[in-house]
Structures are given as C-alpha cells and as structure tokens.
Length: 432
Image (cartoon, rainbow, N blue to C red; front, side):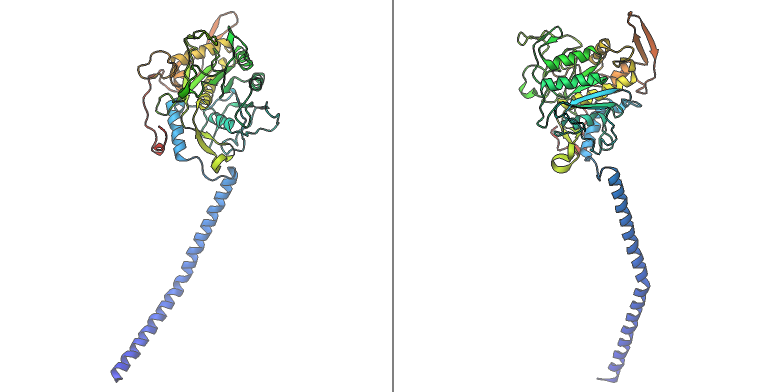
C-alpha cells in the first residue's frame, strides 16, 4: 500500500468516527423528547379510555347508539306525521296505558322511566319485565330517549302485561288488563294487538275484550288499536277491538306516504254475517294510517345479535305512534282528558271528527278510503285545528270558551294532501 492510500484510510476512519459521534450526540438529545411524546400519547389514550368507561357505566354499560339508518328512518316518520313541528309538548300530565308483553326498563333508552303502574295478567310478577320484546318496542315509540326519540316522553306510563312470551294473549287476560288501565286513571289505552271479534249490536257484544273496551270508551278513555297486518291476504275487515265504533283504528303507512302493503282493509259497507252495520263518518275503519314499514324500535335485552335497536313493520307500531301523538293533544287540551271539564264520550267523538278532517289525505282523495282511512296521522294539523280556544261543556248543555296558549305552529291549517319524501341515503338497502 502506498503512503497516499494509507493517509486516505486514516482520514476516512476519522470522518466515520466523527459522524458516529455526532449521531450518538443527536440521539442523546432527541431521546428525552421521544420518550415525552410517547408518554403523553399513552397518558392521553388512558384518560380517553377512562372517560369512555365512565360514560359507558353512566349509560348502562353501552358505548354507541342506534345506526344512522335507524335515526334517519325515524326522522322521516317524524317529518311525515308532523311531530317535529310541535314545540313545548311532551305528554306531561297525560296517563297512557300500554297493554302488551311488558317492558324492559334496563334498556338504555328507558332508564329514565319511572312507571306509574304495572300489572301482570300472565304470571302475576310484581317486577316489570318483557319476555317477548313487543311491549318494549311499543313503549319505546312513546317514551324513548337518548338513542331513539319517543313521541311523548313526558307521559305518566302504565304498563299492563297481557301478552305472553309466545306473543299471544287471551281475550279474558287482555280485557282484565284494559279494566286495570281504566281503574288506574288512564286517559289513553294503546292496544297494538288484534284478533277475531265477537257478535255485537248497539254497543252490546259477545266478546269480552270488546266489552271491556266499550266500557273504557264510555268512561271517556281514548282507545287506540291496530287495524291488523293481513293486507296481502285480507280477511275483509280490520281486527278487533279496532273494529269497535269509537276506537281509533290505525292502519300503516310507509316513509314515502304510501299504504303499507300489510295494512288491513276496512269493511265499511256492512255485512250479513258476522253482522256488521254500515259504518259512517267519522267512524269508518281504519280511521288513520301511521308509520308501519321499517319503523325504528327498541329491542328488549339486546335481543338477537345483541343490538338494543332495530326496526319492525306492522300496524302495532302505527298504533303506538298515534297513542303518543294524541297524548300531546291531551296535554295541550287537558279539558279533553277523562277527568277534564269536557272529557267523556263527547270528547272522543269530537277528536275523531277532527281527525277525519285534519289527516293528510292521499293524492286525489277527498273522502274516506278503506285502506288509506281519512289520511296520514298529522299531529300538527290536529292540534292546530283546535286553535287557541278550548270549550268547556257543562252538564246542562251550556258551554264556556277558554283561551289557552299552544306552543305549536304559527300557521293554522296546512295542505292535507301528501307529498312524497325522499328517504335518507342510509336507507338505500331498505325495502322501499
């Protein structure tokens, strides 16, 4: 090796050692910063996890909520029925009794509820429960908060269990539940159920449930019942007790404002057997249609795949939706409640007349339709039709007008015809 080459190697070695020393020095200077940043991230993530855990415990051990698809469908129905147009009303002071399969109060959307009463016609249990799930779904349509939003979360809620774990109930058991609702001062009884009726004439019937319902009506209790779900294989009329004259019988509508395919048709021309007299306004069946297709509901026990929220189709949901809406009307007009100054049978007949005049009819519809009823339930139109005047009717037939303030729409009466609404983007996989 030549002297020049040896000198170059010495210089290269010196440079390499210098670079290494510089790198070691830079690393030593940066290391504390790296450790600090990593420690900060770990601390931040730990605090975030702790916050989520605390929030989860405060909300029943649940992180998350209903899927955006469900909340989008719910908003579509609230818009369709005018619920979002109502301000300042939540059903406070109105007693609603739901006769169904019970209620699961551990549901994240129901933990704020304090029941005003519980009755179990199936197993006589003193603690509320729901071993079928249908009742929780229906109650949620009235009072749910947090994930989904019920129509009237401020009502005093009575729950009567008359449907067993298989989804069935006897006329005797349901009639017993209806009587219990009346005894416990219900203003509204919600019956998301139906079946074959008895033989009746002039308010007298061979059916025990229909008789209990008629007694409730005579006491001034509003009874809301399902039209039935046999629209694709229709038996010719709505289900009982929805068929009872003064009951408000509810069929089904989709988010686009069309009659739900499963909604039962009403027979308003009468028949020889079983004997049914022709029905007249405002008692033709069904009286209304309300949300029935893919309605967002609460799921008892996080059933099935463990979700607390899902959807259901049927006139059961329609019934609960109308029950919740009417609770808002009775809050705005307490004189129409059963113990109110104008409560009783006359109040029921008056409200039914207003419903027949202030529901949203189909295009080209100007009278009752055996499927569409008097139209889509519109609680905003109904309340606004009452204006700011309430009338108290006394026993001697005289009346007195009282001025009340309703925190609702400024406009009086909107167009009754339906307009198709576009479903949210998240519903593109839906049936409609």
